[in-house]
Length: 327
Ligand code: BTN
Image 1 (cartoon, rainbow, N blue to C red):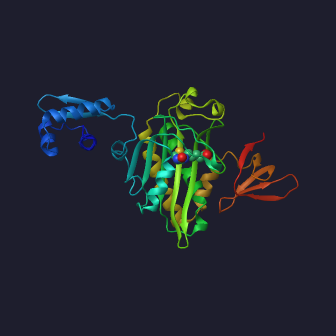
Image 2 (tube, protein in one colour):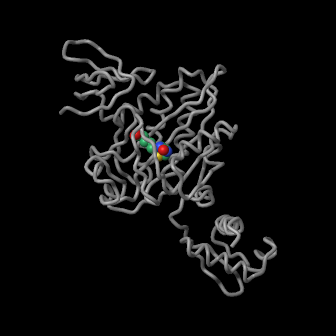
Image 3 (cartoon, rainbow, N blue to C red):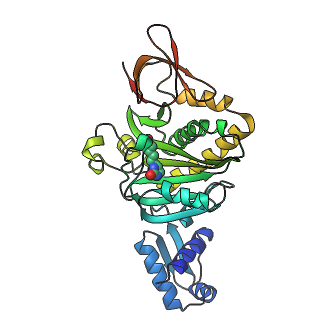
């Protein structure tokens, strides 16, 4: 079975928006027999596409599968650049690794790497990221912003705002951001963001924003070691969530907010970030590589640095840490 023809056929059915496509016409267009068209239709049905066959009229698409294949996402995507090119792999060690390779090969701004399963997903601070097959969104977005390297750290906070807005829009849930960019629901983590940079003497070559979003897992899908700190959108909403809708919404907000950041600076986005923050104004413990500090998380600076005031009145700038709420 020619997979490219199957994909192209899916795209034609999606683009037809509920209008019947004649089997003969499809056969002529793809240069194959009507029986071959029928076999591709059966293949799509096996993948979860709902296709109605109407006598003398042809094939009508009645429903899309829960897949993150480019055709399914791009059929609903409203962005200009982000996700216009999607590299989709059924399974891979980590989308970050592939995105780094693509970024070195001059792939275009907005390219997305998407997979159904990661076998060696990477988290912040060299941790492992659990990425169950077909249950979450594991993707890396390659951006090539024309900004000075000092403006890079805020992109990760901008990405967190884009993700919470998308979760709210698609599910109605009320996520919070734990500094810098963990996304929590009822105090448990549902999303992690890992931003990596490729730069040289000329400045930023690429920003690679890796997003791991737990969507349709149930408790048993998580490794025992993270079961009491992780959650999924399904566990919190009680509903199966359409992953394509979430990807489309995230990419739309990410495009809108990164453009806003590049054009207008961090001001409005900082306010938005703070409005979703579970950290600001609260007593926290910040565990860093060499020391642990306790105090009140007062604010973030325009550079995204957390301002922590300890009991002795001193204000500390925290650049990277694990944050725990202490009350
Ligand atoms: C964190 O530690 O909170 C960040 C987790 C980031 C996970 C995502 S999943 C897609 C991309 N590929 C990876 O290997 N990691 C990121």
